[in-house]
Amino acid sequence: MEKICLFPGTFDPITLGHVDVIKRALPLFDKIIIAVGINAGKAPMYSPEQRLKWIQEIFKNEKTISAAVYDGLTVDFCKKIGAKYILRGIRYVSDFEYEKTIADANRTLDPSIETFFLTCEPKYTSIASTIVRDIIRNNGDASLFLPEVVAHSIKKV
Image (cartoon, rainbow, N blue to C red; front, side):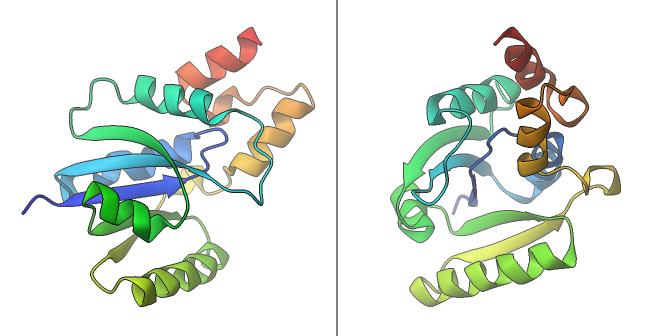
């Protein structure tokens, strides 16, 4: 049975912290699907299409990674794509507390889906998309926190 893992998030924008977690998860799974979630409670800075395009460009040479956009329950999307695993990145203890609550809800909805938590490299713990968006909104240089393709396309705008 193929080990398919879903890495859901808003990725608004995808950061070096996200990329770090994804790359370190590669040996654990046969396939990782990075899924841009549509969250009605959030007003994203970038369109789902733009975020998907960035992800596809970043991982274009990685055959075991694909990307998608989804809405609705994460466990429902897992069922749709055949994923039995969810990957989540953790920076701080507060992230774990929040993520564990979601993992527990997902486990209640579908006990066959397991959530894996990976901590990011220490150099990426301070990187959060919220902070990156604030830097961008205020015309700061966010390139230190972003994959090159993302930083380059943001500078073009």
